[in-house]
Image (cartoon, rainbow, N blue to C red; front, side, top):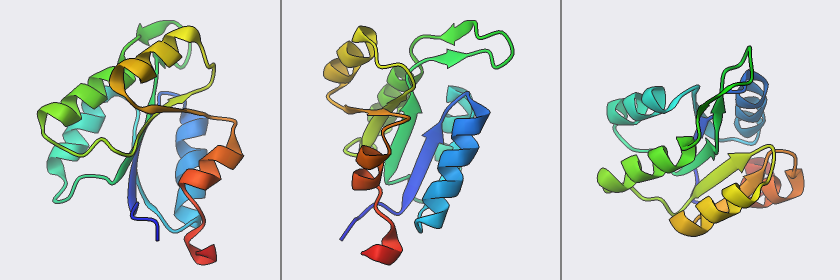
Length: 132
């Protein structure tokens, strides 16, 4: 049985944030959506129980200009979770463009990378609870 119930999604791209949240909710998961690292940390602080899984965008960009705002979004969230002594077993770097930097970051943190367009891998991690 899948122990993941609640998933925090950190992504600056509104379409991925909303679409992924809707899909996971259809699959029976509760989602928390955040557009930036500050919002993610604040929501985690306010929760009685921390999320069971995290999808953290590797890089934050300005939604209008595409300019990189933060190269370390996923790393900052991961380090925050470690500092709070929260479980990072189900932490995934969530990226659109799988780059060498993303792979190095995942290796450094000891986490997996999830490509936003790889739905088969996504469904393996987050299966539809109605089909379980």
